[in-house]
Length: 387
Image (cartoon, rainbow, N blue to C red; front, side):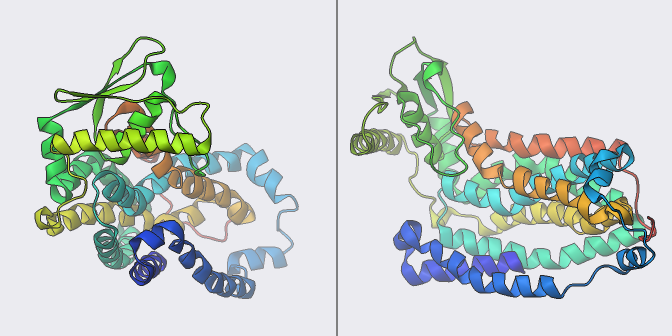
């Protein structure tokens, strides 16, 4: 419901101020609106009481005197922390954020689907997902947490690449056709190419190679890489056309912008002439097919997430439960999940394939599948008052 509400606010804000204004400054409005919700959240948290198991332990004088040392300094508890991260939270961050967030980035940045369509699609998928968290949570009460979560993360693992390929064919078939008909090649000095990882939006990538690759990646165009002699400018080839990019290294801000703008315009003109679409054609979109792909990811994400909280609570003893599970939960959610779009784009720009960024969630999900399969114990039915 939180995600649905966020998408609704974004859609309403974009409709109210217009797409250009939203991209320029309007995106700040949803953050301002959330201030009120933050106040409500703080008030609710202040009213929360301890769990009955912890309250009883505290009343009996059995509460930990050094919870951090006990949670992370004793191997019996530390191994549970590591198990929670590698078995559950690595997949949770990768699967859930890919299914509900990175797929939005992929649709907008690479497939050039308009934001209104993306918001409507994601709101529908999010609304449908609400019931499945309950369904899979209830199923885990019957058959166990482990098999349900393992099924969810395995489904995501095997569907990442096929699903995103199907999404391209459903959302922007002209892009897939152009890629097959007129493949793009970037000839550049490898030493001139940076890893374009920029989680805070402050880094500048202005070398000849970086300008070419970022332009192509932002256009959703896959390309192959060829090595050029050291010191030579990067060249984009599509069909019989070759576009060389000057470097903006060492130039001031205005000059850098002029160089990048001129180069991007030439590259985009060459791509357009080769049949690459600037935007996805709404008339050719298969909305049902797009939702079908999203629905598979929804099933994968909710099968993993539905039993997750119960499994984490059951995994840890009461004395260190809150302290111990917080670390893997927030690293998995905030770092593994939060960095999905940034690492994925950096990998796409470096490799030259719009699907290459999927290797980031694939690796973390695979780690969880193997760890869950071989090391995670079944926790269903464990008493929650074990000290």
